[in-house]
Length: 312
Image (cartoon, rainbow, N blue to C red; front, side, top):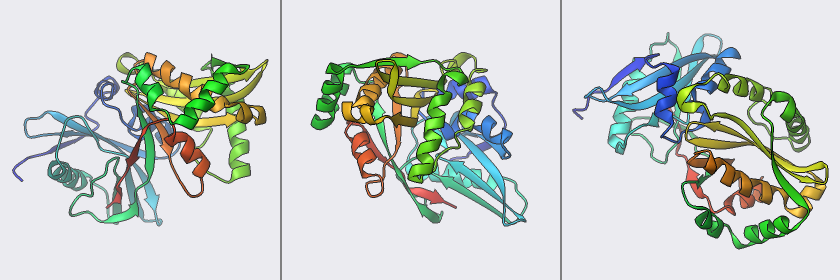
């Protein structure tokens, strides 16, 4: 291929990075704030800009570096690069090859890409199969979003709307949503699942609060449903550029009976849409160990986004 790719490290300022992602929905692992938070917690960080032969910015890749097997370095680009213009598979593969060559790390080293797409780049070896998530296109109008809901999901929502549940948004100061993080810690212990460390949520919000310009709306958003004076269900979302990601959810016994999560998620979709969020990522789906949660996410009418895997 005659295409020449220019790979530059730490070439962009935060406003430039945020501005590029303001119109391109991208996973939070490629957001500037995520890099800051991870660096503050021990990871080394490389921010990479990919330019084509005309010196046009076509991609961004945020890579975390960690020690591996005592003497080696492991570099991981999670759900990246983010492509800022349409490229075919051959062009993306060539750009990945150029990126891998440009990363200067002492040997022994291992550089891996967990791609946020379906294709498998030629010349790379898959070391892990891909996961899947559900993504909602919030650029649709409200009627289209409502019609896309699965019938049972919609009926559950209608029942919740007719119940005594009351939807509201919660504050974004750490003390105003710490109770939800505490509930998440309890859930993880009782159900035995893992996720992004709960403590990093405050770091994310703190870092996002410093943002200016293109990503000034980014940060933590919490929505809840109350029964009387008590919370019956709540969800916390991370917003970053043009995308929001479901992060934490909790429901009481009464909330599960009354469909609190249906009410919260539906209204959160509309609230995030109003803020200019274009895509809502509901997180991974596992139809075996998490069949009930998978059905709930699929019932929103979102599209299944299957990733191809991790490649070295």
